[in-house]
Image 1 (cartoon, one colour):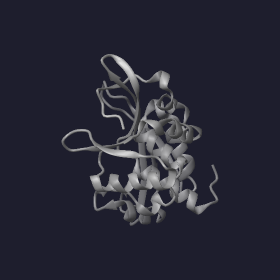
Image 2 (spheres, helix red, strand yellow; image 1 turned 180 degrees about the vertical axis):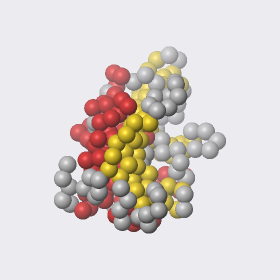
Image 3 (cartoon, helix red, strand yellow; image 1 turned 135 degrees about the horizontal axis):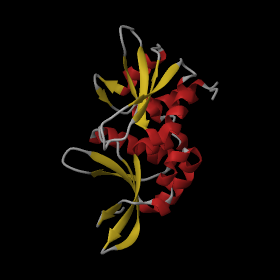
Image 4 (cartoon, rainbow, N blue to C red; image 1 turned 120 degrees about the horizontal axis):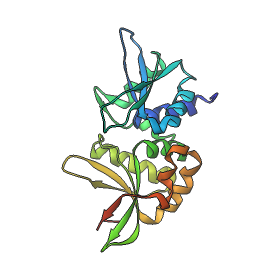
Length: 216
């Protein structure tokens, strides 16, 4: 995948980094590397990431074994490169990975699909044993309420998608899409969803449910 447009490249790598990716030092270089992991069934996602980052520098993909019942991982790590330094400065506050307001100016359905493949969920809303509707969430659990508010506003301003910030437990928040926006959301991200993540946009494959949830 040859990416000539610098803004496109910055957008894709920024949203990969704001999802499951990581920008960090490796060894003694003054420059950072980009790395990202996924379970073996999502090998297509790691290959997709490599196609993008190869526009910056070379990288390698390798397997990472884990004890059962956890699935083994496939990991991508690039060589160090100055390109990643500026992204690190914009996204990270010391070790805290936040939201990059600059990248949000480039927010579109392609970048939203990256967030959704990494951290999204499509579920059923069940009440009294009957499916009443569906719910879509973005679960970037590391984010603060303030970061979620910035992301929520950008999703509304750029894509006219209305998400609400909901508390998932004592420590963490997530973004839940209002029910009437779900078809628009699925239609928008569907062209960018990789094969191994198609279950996240197919109502027929939903296995999880929310009992008596607050659907907005």
